[in-house]
Length: 283
Image (cartoon, rainbow, N blue to C red):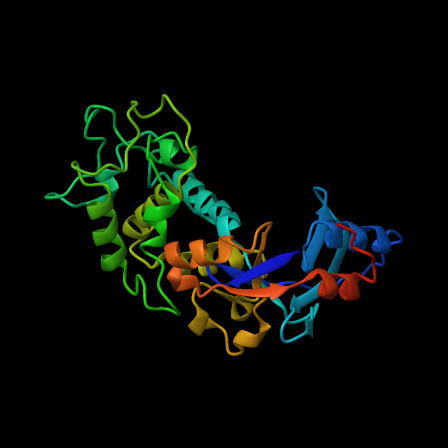
């Protein structure tokens, strides 16, 4: 039996734009999405100068049933938002405001608090290491989940974010790998967010405001159709709902025990996906 378990987390979101093309292989794409249990997708193909293909498929909500709206449906970018952190950092490099290889404590400007690897204090944590995920940070799902809160109740100020990171990376913390920085690569959400905190400290403006002013506006992206928090959107029904596929129904109580903030609910989706894409899903 096939199930999708639904949850929602909002990071940075952008409204998708209208497609100007039709795809001769639309049925093939729909069949492919259905077979891997994906209820909705927005696909874009670009080269250096042009948009080659752009189209949306499926439903932004299965229950209640709501077709994707090419003009208004909003996808959360999740870890794709790390691209914006990288661009922001490199803009500051171009302006000679930061050095990728300097100790980040130089920019955090906290004389009484430092971020360093407790076992290798002589190995500076730098922006280059944070952006390349080589700072030896031991980011775990369980530790990250502890900071997830409903609606917009987490990190409502830059100070709160900074306090969290100085606590998270404290010298007595276990959130470090047992290897020197720059000798191991390990994907880290925490490290990327720490780089965003550096952007805030150097520019003396909130990170989300910096992104809007110096990245989105120059790209002629309507900042009124973007957001970092749920409160940024007038109609939350336009947010595309999140689903996760579970091969076993027993996953549900386990996930709800470990991640109660997500309020995960179960829906049977075999029939729904067959209806959405008009295909026969054979197990």
